[in-house]
Image 1 (cartoon, helix red, strand yellow):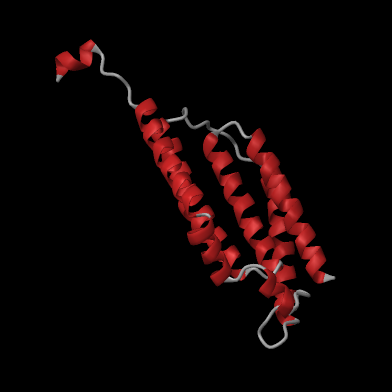
Image 2 (cartoon, helix red, strand yellow):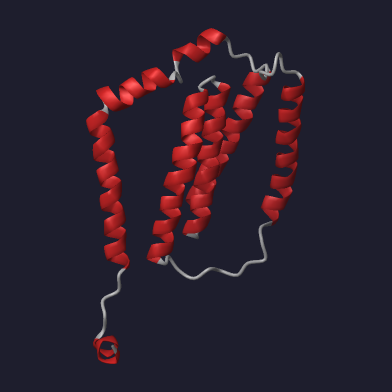
Length: 177
């Protein structure tokens, strides 16, 4: 039962962050919402018993890819930062949400069995997916070409962003140099 409740809570948080990603006006705020989406997806994978996939989700996507996104956004200089008074919605929803998640995690850890959180995941379910050996076989053998093509496309996108962000020198700047 706890497993289903946690899965639903983090699913709702994920959908809410995805909607927030779309309605934000500033690209940095959208990138931070995307970090929340990727973090909650990692928790969803963890609840499904795919620990390796959850760790990869955090390390690769929420870590490396988001750093790349923020770097490109900063490189493009996507507008001036707006001065705001802050969001009251974040205070009203964030603090109780944080406290609620903390209580749920503590409750789950206190009810743990031999150091493992009792989330209702059976050992058979963990073998079905999230096995590092089967993921490596798929990624580096069966889908090696799409994996490499994707990395080249990301590199081309970064180079395109650099070219688009570079401002052409005006005649005035050339004379001063």
